[in-house]
Image 1: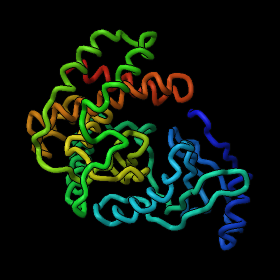
Image 2 (image 1 turned 120 degrees about the vertical axis):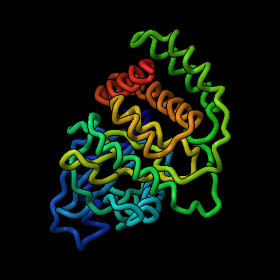
Image 3 (image 1 turned 180 degrees about the vertical axis):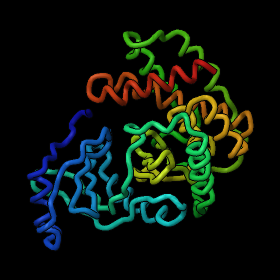
Length: 291
């Protein structure tokens, strides 16, 4: 899915585990067929999961994911992965890799909770509880979404150009022209998951059961995690989510802008390599255009 993506297979993982963590030699290793875009996921036994970064330009991803998992563990009532170990490059794989605890549940990509008001309340609670975690005086550090909307103008220009065969681009350009002007006056940066997409949320019985892929947890625009309202929820539950969080009009509109930025990016980037992700981006854009 990415230029220069490293190869990682079950035999490579087996060799890495056996060499670096001999205490797990008797545990089976198998790849998990998730639609993740940044990591290849392998289960080790019943209780552990190894995450192998797929973007070679981000060599600190594994250590960052473990630090984030440690910060979030036990801070909400929803289950999240706990850090276990940091693996080193080897056996032909060039990056560090992370071992975390396995979090049970069904990904929301397989069991869509978008029509559930109860799930919307769970999701709002998650965002509220993450926001309460102390940032330690840190603010947005750059490098990804969560700072200034206008910083993404060049990226969106690329997205519009690359999406012309997929969608009617002129209305989308006009949407962004208005969104990018939204001011920021809703308080300091807060801790944010920054990637609350269907593949990262686990459900059980229509309720939110867990949250995974927490490696991008960091201070950001308070509106950033609101983008989950459009990636996850239909109209009625989205209104419930907003009411639970007490969002101002400006904060809500900035959340729409972040949802737009994310959806435009995945629409074309994964059109051939991860069609499911691309289709979900299109669904978000349709929800945004509907109002």
